[in-house]
Structures are given as structure tokens and as C-alpha cells.
Length: 253
Image (cartoon, rainbow, N blue to C red; front, side, top):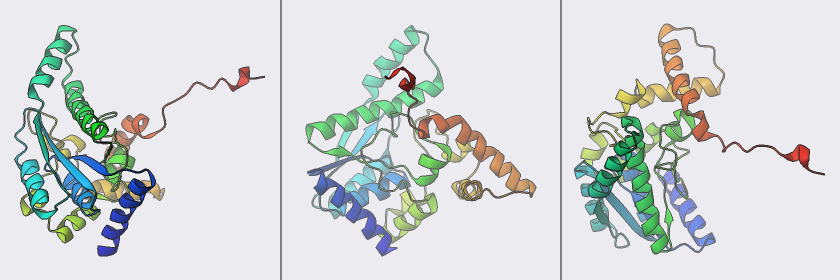
């Protein structure tokens, strides 16, 4: 586990050095992914700014993690901002236009946070660090396009969720965060990731591995798991693939 962690930390440092970056900006929600990713950022020794951005949620775990980071690392300086008023104005304008989809509003929360991260990162001549894991980013596309998917680097995007949990344990991330139910924090009803995805991350990982191996699943439980996994994957594939470009090569001389 130490080798895995050091590899990621060195990868971040190497990328930052190559591009003359001195500051890392990362959103922390109180979830396990952002807790691990922000800790790995802090371990680089580079100036690290964990940001807690509240929109109708108290973000207690996010605040606790930001304080924990600040106490543990001298190069960490947390930022806390309440985006509720801005989101409220956006919500009113959207409803006036008849664009009042709850799903769209959930995604807009994520995009508003992305805007705040880039505002700070650009002002500090830094970059925005992503917090997505492999299952979310490359399996089922469980992220918001141009929201939490809008980042400069993704240090844990090749790590499964179980890898992230193991790293969290090794790094001694706050136990309250390790024990918390994964949630994106974008819904007023507090729904968890499992509520939205229909199964646990462990089950998603099994289905992802079977799909990558082109395995033939015969057991009913495996078939059900694969069906749910592929439904999410197919619905979100547009986010994981490059933006389509109309090919005009036939008009070239």
C-alpha cells in the first residue's frame, strides 16, 4: 500500500514540476475519494488548498477533514465558502425559464463548485485536482460532465473504490469519513450513491471486471448485476468518450 501511495504522490509532484505548478486546489466533500485525494495532494509538499463549498448541506465531514489536513500538513490552507445564495439565484432564473429538472439542478450544483475551484486555481496559478475513482470515471460514468468531471489531473482515477478505502485506512483518514455511506451530496433528500446506482461499489467492481474480460455470466445474480452496470454505462458513455466532431476530411483537397 505504501508503494501505491508513493507512486501517486510522486506522479502528482512530477506533473506539477513539469508544468511549473506550485498550488493544488481540490474540493473536499467529506467523502472517501476527496479525503484520500486531498491527503495525497498534501503529501506532495506543494501548497494545497482543500475547498469546502456548501450548497444546502452542512458539509460537517468535509470541514472536519479540511481541519484535519490543516493540522497535519503545514502546506495546507483550507478555504470554506457558502454558495447557497448564488445557487438560489440560479435556481430562480432556471425556474423562470421553465428549466426546473431536479436532475439538472443536482448537476448544476456540481458545476457551480467546479467554477469556484477554477476561480481559485486560476487566481493562485494552480490546477484543479479530480477526486473520481476508476469505477465512477471509466466504468459507469457516475460524475457530472463539466462538474466534478471538469479537472486538470485525476490522481486516483485508475484506483478502484476498494483501493481508495484501503488507502484511506492506511492513511488513517478520519474514521467518521471511512464509515460514512458514499454520497455525492447533490440532492436535497440526501440519497446515497448506492440509492442512485442500485448496487454497492463492490458489486459495480465485479460487474466492471466481468465486462472488461468479456465474461459470460450465467448466474441470475451476476446477470442482474451486469444488467444494472451496463445500463448506467451505456447511458453515460457520452461523458466518457471524446466529444464527437463532424468529420470534414472528404472536403479537403
